[in-house]
Structures are given as C-alpha cells and as structure tokens.
Amino acid sequence: MPVYVGLLRAVNLPGHNRVPMTGLTQLVQDLGFTDVVTYIQSGNVVFGGTSSPRRALEETLEGALKRHLGVSTDFLVRRAAEWDRIIRDNPFPNEARDDPGHLVAMLLKATPDAAAVRSLEGAMRGPETVQVSGDHAYIVYPEGTGHSRLTAPVLERHLGTSGTGRNWNSILKLGELSTR
Image (cartoon, rainbow, N blue to C red; front, side):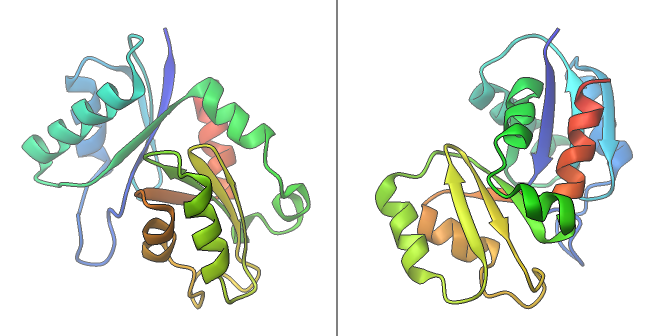
C-alpha cells in the first residue's frame, strides 16, 4: 500500500484557516485512508491508501477539507518515495547539517518553466539562495524567514504556481513518519 505525505498550504496562521489536527486526522480516515498521523499544527499528515494519481488525490482531499472543515486551501501530496528523493537530492547539504531551521523545502502545485525560474532569480535581492528542482524548491534563508522579503507570495508570483514550504527539520521528521 502506498504511503503519502500531505501538506496543507497556509493553515493555522493567526486567525486564518484553522484546521485542528484531530479534525484533519478524522477527515483523512473518513476518506478511507489508513495509518493516519499528523505532525505539529501546521497541516502535515502522513497516510496510507490505494494508489491514486497525485492530482486526483489532492483534489479529493481539498474538496473534503472544504466540505467538512470549511477551509479552502491547497493540499500538496507526495508519495513516500518522492519525499525520500526530496531529502536525498537536497542541493544544500551543509545548510541541512549546520542550520536546518533556515533551510526550507517548498512543494509546488506545478513545475515552473525555465522563464519562471529566471524571473524569480532576477527578483531576488536578499541573501537567500533558491534552487528549483521539478515541482519543488529548496530555499536557504541565512537570516531566517521572519524578516526575509522572499516570502511565499513572492515565490508563487514569480514561479507561477502555488506551494507550501517546511523547514528541513520538519521535512526530515515527515520522512521518518513516512517510512514507519
């Protein structure tokens, strides 16, 4: 049975898109998925189920989230093997080892084209470093994300797709949970 990692975009921010993890767990279980585990309060869920195309699975989860919890947002899903590849192919191993809280992996809804990546690179003005690889990006925030101008809306606008990021500590923990 395939194992999936799912991330909700922009939930549980102050006063915005509240999704209790118990509600998320129940929602995913009610859809027939098994071994459902959530991780911290930012909308991370690992679950098992039948093999489904990723986009269909995301649409199913997004629809259920809207119907049952009243939240309309993106759900980004990757198979456990894809998650392992995200970890393995990290182009910033030193940052992952030395400062994992300032390294973010951002899952993207679609793969940006080369022009979109160039647009992002041309717009960058701070100390951040970005490497786009298919439908995800790795971002190093040497001064942290809190004061950076390279925000999720900026990334999404230039890349032409929505996405959601997690710091490297969370990426690794979700990887562990997907191989349990």
